[in-house]
Image 1 (cartoon, rainbow, N blue to C red):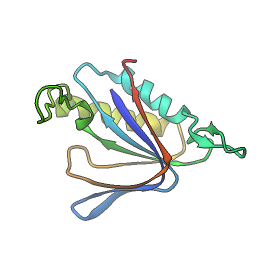
Image 2 (image 1 turned 90 degrees about the vertical axis):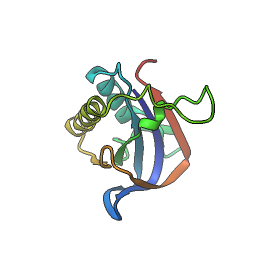
Image 3 (image 1 turned 180 degrees about the vertical axis):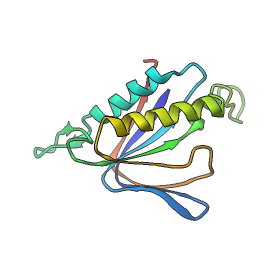
Length: 148
């Protein structure tokens, strides 16, 4: 499982011209799932997401978590995080999980975040064509993988 995490001033996701999720200061999490991922992977990444100390403290050091700053989290499914472009120029998505498996783990990830924090947890629409808008803060962008 992969999570591309961006620290944001604000972020939103729109489907068919309708805003379905929006946060102010916090994290945009683009979540990719592969065939071998399990609930354990989802929980590991959710726990790391809440605990990452990537917000500035009073001294300007990255020392605070999204929980510490009472931020929001916007989670968007992103199967293209498992694109393979080693052969040719057209991406292959064979490493991305089948939609049924991916949706189950995506929902588990979101449910875990909601159960273990009181933060504003928003989502996109799994499998939909979405437009994601964000203002990256820093910029700070991290790639987390459950397999590492």
